[in-house]
Image (cartoon, rainbow over all chains, first blue to last red):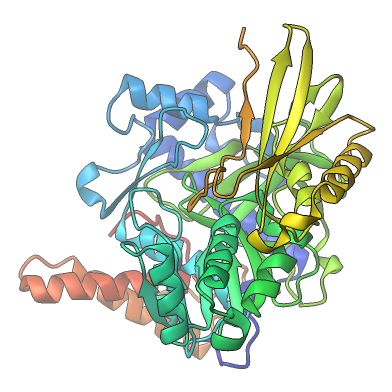
Amino acid sequence: MPAPTSPYWNPKTETLPKDQLRALQLTKLQRLVERAWHTSPFHRRLYEKAGVRPEHIKTLDDIRRLPFMTREDWMDNQAGKPMFGDLITRPESDAIRYHLTSGTSGRQPLRVLDSRKDWSWIADMWCYGFWGFGIRPDDKVFFAFSYGSFIGFWGAHYCCEKMGCLTLASGNMTTEQRVKQIVEMGVTVVCATPTYALRMGQTAEKMGIDLKRDGKVRRVVVSGEPAGSIPAVKKMIEDMWGGKCGDTAGMTEIGTIMIFECDHQPGGPHIIEDHFIEEVLDPDSGTPMSYGERGERVVTSFGRGFIPLIRYRTKDLVCKVPHTHCDCGRTGDIYEGGILGRVDDMKLIRGTNVYPRAVEAVVREHAEVEEFQIVIQRVDNVQDEITVKVELKPDQQDCWPRLQAQLGKDLADAHEGLRFNVEQAKTGELPRFELKAKRLQDLRPKY
Amino acid sequence: MDRTTDLLGNPLTVDDIELLDLYRRLKALSGRADLPPVATANVKQAMVMLWNACNDLALLHEEPGCD
């Protein structure tokens, strides 16, 4: 256990000077590629086709000689060689965990396996994040999570056990039961998706519970949705819970988180660079983007033995800035604003680009809103219309139509004057979410 | 125990040497087939935790999948 006064889980590597960090990454990359070449037929084929061999990786820049790995390749490989494809490096009997992707996008979920070491490493990456956000062994950590086949907060649960926290699972509970237990047990840390953290807060209000007054929560750790780094969403969560809200992001393909917000909260999460190489590339050309430019995350992970993940195209939209934007002492660079959305979730409405996360950022500036939904339709087979349906908090019904006009103006101002229709939904009409929220419905015909 | 430096080329500290030594002893023990299940399983768990510490501290970078 790091000394309780240490702000870092791993002081040695979290504060490594950049040149040493790069040297460590190169050593790990060389060994990873060597291992993938010898143990994963999937990677061997990929590299042979590209004419690249492990000994070609002499500098970090040589990573660009390696071909990309895509989700589509992975899915095809699984489909062609059920159940796991020949991507995996070890026999199935060496695994102790089996998980699936959440399938948010409606595609075939990916199946993943982990060994004992993989699972321990997965928990450890969460430890970097939890410790860095100020969570300590004397905390009581509550997981508002279903504990199903989706990996979600599983690793975080094991991280908290590893750190020595009192760890509370709530897989079988209703939202009301969760709120009650959080208060009764004096929980100090709550983990949930941003959407569900808000929902629990709203439920507490309906139950007559003031979480700030009646609860002891000092940290809310969110994950799973880009909204976790939207300042207005974080402020709503902090106002409800009375504790600091910090974002993390990971993916089932990695098995854990690769970025986390430190206690200093410089406006985005740090990358765990001693365990990952995070490239930011132009999604079309594949060329590297500079600091401060938006691009697609491409990740290489050093930790998971079962599944080598090398230059995996995530389709996450990010903007990397130097670690010096934060004064916490970590040398891992920062994704300003967290995960900004998906490269492929941009919607084109009458010539204007619309990202769901950007709409949410505007909607959440209005505290009267309890829930919302974005609906895109094609009218008369010609014109695309975008509508934001808004459900108001029960005690805020009087703000309509003032809010309708203001929201319409704010959304237009944020989208080059694009007209948004803003409609009021009845109380309880819009869907609520526990895991990843799906607030966008694109009803336009698919050709 | 033959290494004298970590992956960055820094000399191993006394603590580093102890961690690596513990890991190697546990690894050897967890590979034995003559121990009762209660010993094998728990030693493996302990070995994995030590691997995790040594790996994160850049003392070694072994294939993570090999239990």
